[in-house]
Length: 236
Image (cartoon, rainbow, N blue to C red; front, top):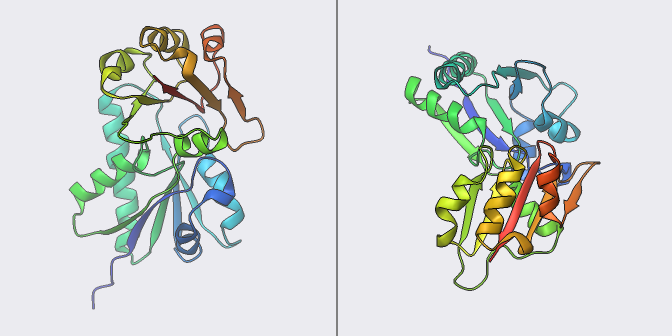
């Protein structure tokens, strides 16, 4: 008799505070056979694992998957496919597995690429995705700032390459979130000023962690790189 195929659970563990992980995610993490998490090829560290650790049983099996920090599209696609094959092999052994990510697992998350690769390679695999609290939701709560009101709209952008995304799209939203605002911060500040949003912007770095910082003088980011875990909430 054929062995039943396991289920893959995509889990967002939230932005940093272990208390913000969804209850449903905790239940799943306590019963799956294996937990996957992404790390850089330069180390085996995972902030998602750190966040989830207080909720994991002592017997939890955690397996790190190394992803290259590269802009080469071919190298990135190859790593997504290779790790998807690894996960599929475990699922086909009848094991349930989870893939954990920071924040929400479908918002700028490695899981999204793994999910697409698994759906292409093994569309019969059952996948259950459990959403998590995004960093910008938690940041807005941290500073008691409404994200949207009335008929306003919210635009979520990547700032990894600077402020051009904001320049191209800022006219269509009253409220903007710039995630990955750790590089090219001078250009991000310039773009915010051009859009008339700099004075009504706030940055949050290392949200929910011991070295959390709320930066209300966002213009100061032009003089220093604020660190990897940084986002900006801006309003017109």
